Length: 446
Image (cartoon, rainbow, N blue to C red):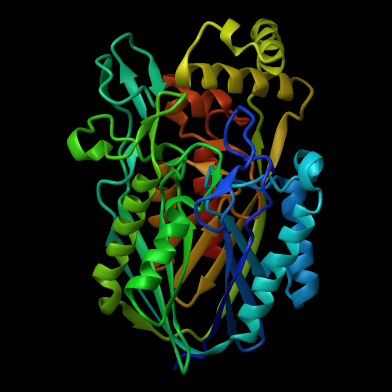
């Protein structure tokens, strides 16, 4: 017999105008709001164990800022730190929460953000009701696409542009599985948790938006009365919204942006509708299970730093100086290739005085025969596949940007192929495979 109690709440975290927008290697400041940003929280309790699962409509939160907000959530709500599972949806039209990046506009926003997230957890705990949990796996088709390609010159490019005649073939494939959890509660709204991996950089510009993850929650709640939704983004480091073979209506209301990427708000709505529709397609057919225990565990793992040679550093300092002085036009690359060499140069310089190894925090929660596992950055699809194959659980939901942001985690072969993700990553080849190995071992201990 199920012993589960579940609660839900959301709070608005939309920032003031003028605040810096995160997500690009160029300055942007908020000029308007397309849709509000939210912190969505689900509280689960079995016996004496209470956990909080949180999704915030932000691109990322740096480790020190994550520590501060998690400490406040724990203190305000009487939760153990390892019982908090907080993810960023990774929308690229959201603000910085780093006080140093927001001070010139509104240095109160990080404090406001921390309070609003903690409030969401508080309200979710106050909303706890007896619940029955079910799960299933649906599909979100033709909205996520590989973003790394082998080119005719033998190289690898990230986002080479729609219709680029120099594309030979994509490198990798997409995991279109859409994990769905439904919790029916006594005398209260049903809670739906969605989990699917795709990069939310669909809109561009200087207007605040939750992009398709937030819009999918809105679409689902409108479509099914009495439902409250939360979306946990999956392994999205090597996939995004760009179909390089797009034609006809595929490009409706989209514009060609500075980095050779086509973007548009209506396309974010399209992805949201497909994701919400994928959930609705399986909503009535979940497998209900008894939940008589919740277990949580975190683990620090050590991975090697991706340091440059002395010769590489010489060029990196030149590109870094040009970029920081606003002279990107003097760097001999364009579009996404320019973004790639700038990110690579910044990584090389940054790590020249950095440690030889980094510690990464893996976070996991077991809810009966279901498990969530969070990675503190942007993992490639292969990491998600490796974790989903775990035999200890009927369903594993891998989540990106969980309890921290440590950058990209490409698979081993990506380092040989090149491309933005591997060239900008702080970590040496083999790190992704370490995450899969250690992540599965962590799940097995639950």
